[in-house]
Length: 411
Image 1 (cartoon, helix red, strand yellow):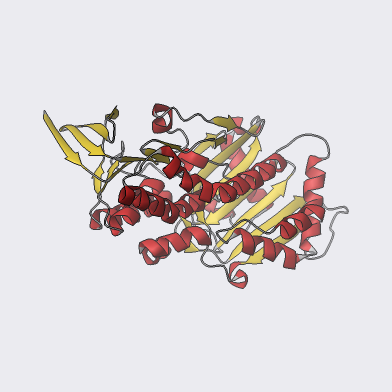
Image 2 (spheres, helix red, strand yellow; image 1 turned 180 degrees about the horizontal axis):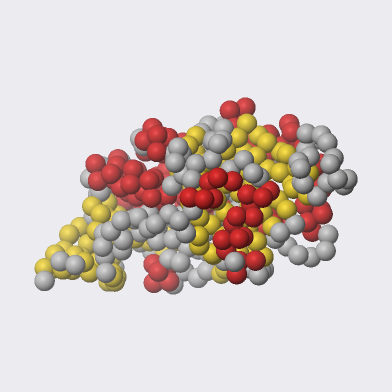
């Protein structure tokens, strides 16, 4: 068995979206970077990424947006509707179907002028990022069977067990990009707490193509369902339901086709579905001496607004600035690295709150909650200028203005 020791300016734990994009950015700035990843290849896809403009702008900055757009679908609209039984049989009108009345809220992304909204398979995006990372000179220590840490006064040594031996990398800086269940976070003693919407489950799978390049979501008495185009051949299909309905996951996800027949054919191509209990995390401190968390390891959130992937990508430029300054000054203490959290705090906290609030409305069974939810959507339809302003501001790197948020609540 071989055993080697090398050096790197930064070692990233985790080689998914967070780790690969950060590695590309650091290497592009001349920072010697290594990534530790347990997988050899991407996991099988059971969901998709809906990347908002701040995320796709990061992909542009990294030089991979053209490839990502070719591999995915540039979304043309974000559409929602409330589906309910008509008041009278055979009703007519633009929001009435054969057996359902649909109240639509649809925003054309081009009219927002905010940038590219992209639907893409996680595995395809990881392939693109991995190739770019290797071209940039990032060392990827994949197929890791395990890793451990040794702490010295001014450096870490990461010991990586691989099939052909143990590789050790000495570094002054660690980045935790190993997801919401981050092991590095635990190793560093950075505490966290979880929150789950009570009784909620998400049934998710990848199906065939859908007719429109959109993100579509239907709200009904059983919860919520949706689809996101991921390109010419795939779509992300999901249902947010009470956990009792997840006992029959195939029926739960296919129920969406009864609410929105347009993408119904995509369900025939689903190879498998997964049932997950969604949860987010709160991490009071993201930094320790010589180490910092990012992405889902720092601010893992619920999937309901599709903001998680974009928030991870938004982290990258700011994190790279903070790490570059720490390396330049030789100061890698927690107080210095905490500047990253301070600069990201407002944006990530707002996104988590918004997603949490929406989660409570999607499958809550308290009397009156669904009625209030449906009424709110119908009221929003009457003020599409406000809706577009909210989406435009949410699609910026900042937090929507207080006045916009207040009007959304008062409608």
